[in-house]
Figure 1 (cartoon, rainbow, N blue to C red):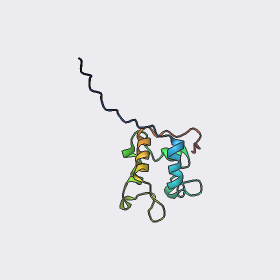
Figure 2: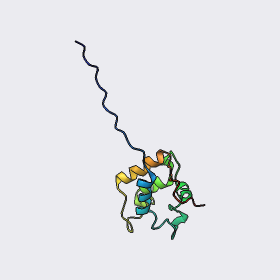
Figure 3: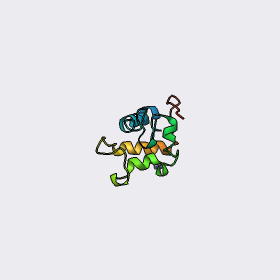
Figure 4: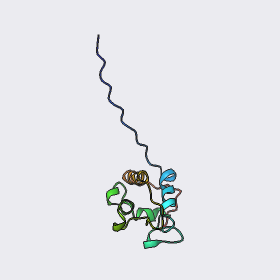
Length: 114
């Protein structure tokens, strides 16, 4: 009688991050208050594709300004400031990191900006 071959453990599938469902709501919750159409603190905008891509290196979260700012300590310029804004969770920060590493695709329906 033949012994069945061992079955490899399943590899967890991590879904690609959808901009409209995950990233845009992140910006709405944590960024647009100070970096949106009415206010552009630090001349930074996250309400346009151009504004986002000015702070993101698609495929390289570690060298993207956006990821550095949301994952650093308060002493290193962390955003959003904890004294005025609820903070993103570790899962939300990991989601943004994954989105950037996947190429930081922004929906065609998002305003392009200049």
